[in-house]
Image (cartoon, rainbow, N blue to C red; front, side):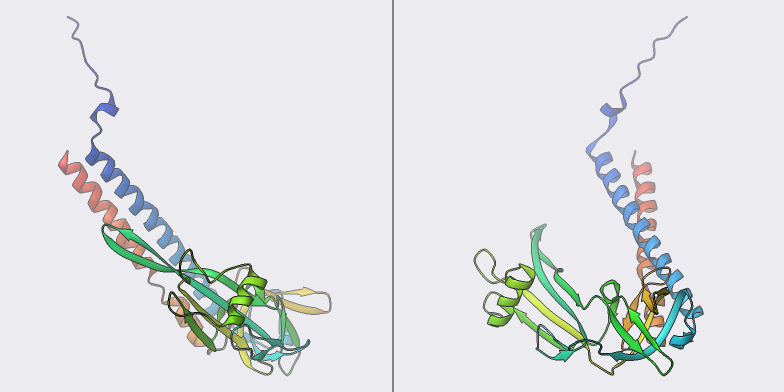
Length: 257
């Protein structure tokens, strides 16, 4: 005897709850993958930094390196954009506060509006030689030397408005009011002692330190401080928390069916 079997199309059995759980699982899965991968990358970098010993410039070979030296002025000194300080190089950061409504609550975050590192290359020397640093590729860990904010009822200085307009083609003015902006600058002056992590390679008569297997980091902090900061990444915990959340959501979804 032949019995008829009716197969209900799967799309007819998908409910709104199923779609919601699927979306939550997808978001948690992506977040856990992102944070775990990023934390493992930071862990590899920290291990490489710990294994790389401080070298004299004359002893640099191609590959990961760590050097300490003093900033060398080979060209005319610059003027920093915020305070107008004389310097060999500067890092200028402007962030914009962007707000949004979510679930009836007003939330907001700071987003990079302008980031500028000048010049693209600077030089460092110790008692054995000179090495160039590819500054425009660098991750900068320097003390803030200048800081201001502007907003709806707080106009930025005229020269800052002009600077943003002419150099960066940006505006401090929003649709009705000033944009909520905060400005920070970090500078390096001639003779200042710094630490540099990166990859050394030979270019012509002089070596240059760039980003490679070792990320290029320029810092005025002690070497142990930046190594410790690299190792104290909490992103792995966030990643595993998201993964655990995905597993719990999946179990709850299965049990509810």
